[in-house]
Image 1 (cartoon, rainbow, N blue to C red):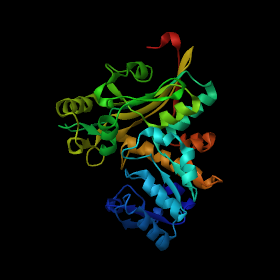
Image 2: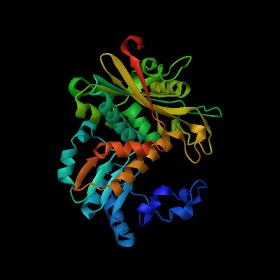
Image 3: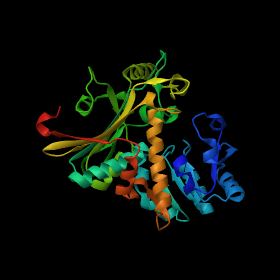
Image 4: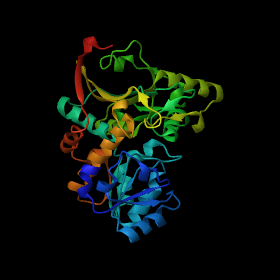
Length: 364
């Protein structure tokens, strides 16, 4: 954020703990922020944001929590301030609810609101659109992510490089799902961890390995939005380090679930990481497949891990575009409503995106 700090007047950081104040990886002087220690929830979002408006005159809130999105969006809209977030979080609501952005545009139109800034969703939406603008609408879209991150010391528990709560919701608690013909969403009767899938056909052309990890089919919002937009089948396959997945699967098979305290969060600071996070998308055509991907090694990132870093890039790029090229009309918008060319130009300043083409005859 530091190089873009001049785009903001006041910067107020609100968090439940004050660890940000002691981070050696931040330029605290250049960021010129005010810190407020507070726990924001769906219940107290309105009074807290109202107080922020009164005390600091805020005009925009960037929600990077894992709280339900709608109550905070509703509170911001009621106060006439703009709301941005990293993903759409909700309890007891299927992901299909969020594919109808127009519904929320009618309901929340007292500000300009932008959803799903980050890596996936976020940068991946624009990578897909960039590829389709160059090669045409494909027969199928397949997003693949392999996070091979593992702690440099032995871990007895399964481990993950991002939110334990959100990962377990996606992998263990909620049903699996993907989009079929015409982009119609299909929800499975079981969670993703129940039926792992092979990843070699998606990773072999990108990364040579002795063996390829098992993955899970996760109904991520970027894939559903893109499938609906272009009326094509799509799916997202997510894989973690095989050691972690094996332990996770053992817990699930034994207990029928996995508890948050049974999963280790490895952030790459107190617990250094080996491995990388690789994210890409395959566009399938009759005569070829096009893959665009990027890969970041965990140990090259300071103050975070590669997964978090790529999310942060998506947030910064989206925030910068939102500020410098304002959306003219109030309502609720999605990250892919931002200008694709400018967005990808800024992403390229931080991430190296590789494009490969594989003829159909050579596909695994």
